[in-house]
Length: 239
Image (cartoon, rainbow, N blue to C red; front, side):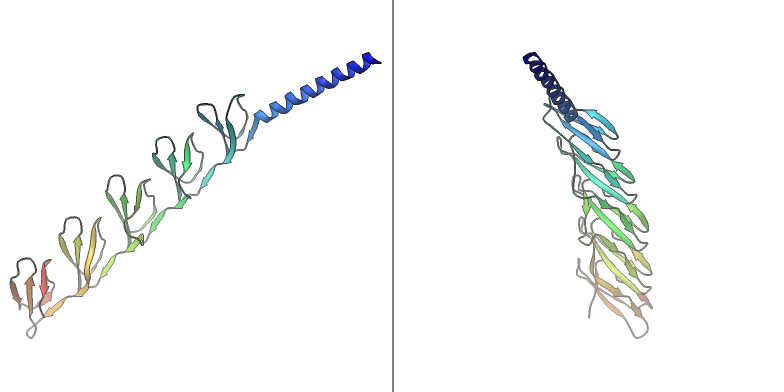
């Protein structure tokens, strides 16, 4: 009976040992779906396995986790930052976005900019200082990883000038001023802003004349020739 008891204990020990080994092996196996990724944080590096698949974890590793890939629709994009060097990139849909080792999602995924025929958008690259202008009907404008809107409202409407209207526009970078007269749509360039408002041109006839002063030089001139008159860039109409 003692021999039988000893044999029973030995068998039980073998079974328990085998169960422990199987349990440990199962803990090392990861099942990854087709829209998932396995991140393995080793002792010195990070390894990424994209699904679908069954993967065996290394015996020595710090941690591991499975996470969903990011689905990007045709009009969506996602900024991704590399946590090692800080560099950013833009991933554009449609795609199932699988991250690389050390990648991190920079905020939520965003929708591409869409413009109507009368709209424009100005984007400032915070690294280079360059301004990109996109104008007119477009369906999918993707900002660069370091770009942001120049204007707080983002997308702006062009200035619609009627045939007897004009507007002064100043380049804030150079200080130069230009005059645009209607009829037309006016789209601002990178550093331009409207000076004042949209003005009506003056109809000069036999009974009407216009007295102007040059704001830079100070001299005046009187315009009497019959026309629909629009002042020059630096001219201001005197009362």
